[in-house]
Length: 243
Length: 293
Image 1: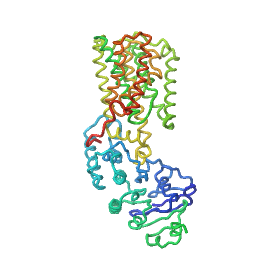
Image 2 (image 1 turned 180 degrees about the vertical axis):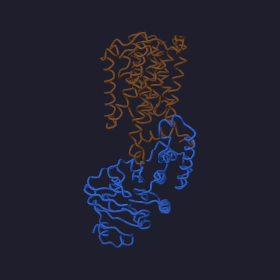
Image 3 (image 1 turned 90 degrees about the vertical axis):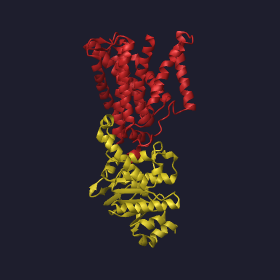
Image 4 (image 1 turned 30 degrees about the vertical axis):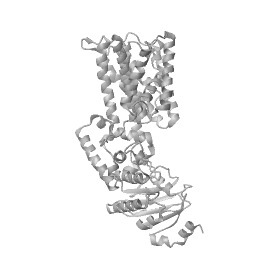
């Protein structure tokens, strides 16, 4: 996969590529433009200059839902879960291209729809089990803890069956034990063939799981490399310590 | 007794209106101020087809729906560009436009004179002449409408609508075409109002543009809010309550001139009190059932 950006004031002359089957992390101080990069890739923000290529095809002008269709899905820093739906329902809506989403099948409720619904329930439960939230399936999201909601947001994005999963701060704001769980799940995803792009502030987590790290500052790429390389990179150390 | 059948028919007509508006407002988050306008499309289509062309009432219903589908489809797409409060204003504008078409396209609608003497429905040689018999027909039609809308809300489609109501960006981020859902829902909800209009035309036998004003749209809105947004049965209860309430007024001896404004005041007071103490309406949104998707 290969991405070229350029020209948006939040992100300048940024050009990088993400390797399939690896975990790439985007790090940098606050305001460096990391979430903007996510928003550009996911189609929420229009790109002013440059292009974004996914598996050789340009996705620069596509709307967000079409980009999910092509195999890229993301989580949000602010989660954006459906508070008045249950955990299970949040995962269910993530499933793609279901008959039940179309009006006439929903009205007629034929046997294939019912089969699909049963299979979906099973799939959703499996995903909840993966993030250890199965017992909370019927809880409204507004009743879940922040850590649980974070895990649920992961389950929902997994429901989309996307190939490239972009996680916005998956390890932030949750207790240590849950960070470990989260990181283990992320590493497992790669074993299943997924490609992961992570924005993260938790440096320990970043160093632990990343195959490749890209460092941004003021919307530009300062450095990139393996965790070992980044840890000793003078420019990176300088921007983080403010020296 | 006959009068009670008449009231029940009215209740059913408003059940259809409230349930369909609830689909728009309580599920998709589309505040429509033009629901009375779509009711009018059904009413006038039926009136015109039945009185001028001798079309059977039962056939006029789907034709009224077709007219409403066309109008709502035309309006739905540009209205997507408009968000929030602006959408409400645009919808308000649509209601005014529809009302003015009814009032001024005299060759089609008889303008302010409307249609009188709209005959009762007839199947083969049987005429639903009495309120009692008409109530049976209306009940069947109402049941079908409510059932279909309930089905929509209870499906994956409905679940996604609830998501849209809460957070459109999130729904887009999981690959759903939000605009498509909104357009379809708007068309379905608005054309169901036309069915209520067709029933209304033959129940009351007389229609004019003044039956379908912005005030009538607001009345339907009130039923939805009082009954409970996002709850289909709440709309049923709300319609029952707000239609039968003025009838209860008849037991209190108020003069005719006071009755109508008094009714308005009561509705207004009800709305205010409910919004203050129970904003979710009489029947709150149905809490998720186990295993439903």
